[in-house]
Length: 258
Image (cartoon, helix red, strand yellow):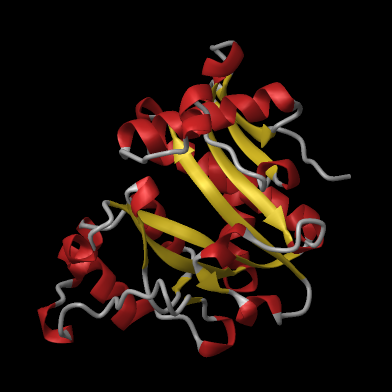
């Protein structure tokens, strides 16, 4: 069994994509947000098809938020891409390895999960939808006995100085232990401690931070060492690590089915 029963909240449901058409709908949602809203410069092929895709999609499970009051592609209003180590072996690498050294987490025993390509339609960006997504992830990690989750999370804009306050706060307060620390690849490494500690105001830094990264922090998540600039997608990326055992209570209470 590689799936779980849909979870519901009002007119919304969260579940895994069931066929190629639903994966395509999630890719078109990703394109609208990453290339439309965020100003990403995708390849001509991606631009022509107006969907964000790569070779990893065929190996991933695609978590979807569905608006049951809509039909067709418009019904997919949120998505997360999930890649387990046991499945990744068929491809040979994680997406995150294009930006970060992930050997520390790969050295851990047990199943690990890469999270990526998270996005939600602008009209649905609220706490209820994010909670539903995390309930889905909670069900998924329970189903597959996931020990650790990791991936890239992004700030919009490929200028690290634009995010100096938030990056500095993350570095000083949430740097991962060495045993599970992702590190930006040497030729891509951008320092995060761009301001001295005394100039970092926590409240202002959190206000300047993307909601998704704040969500990871609330789950006890850590940040890797070094940011990576992605001009093609107009982002500044950081590595994220979440030990599922450290948030078992939160998952059981808030994110997994009864």
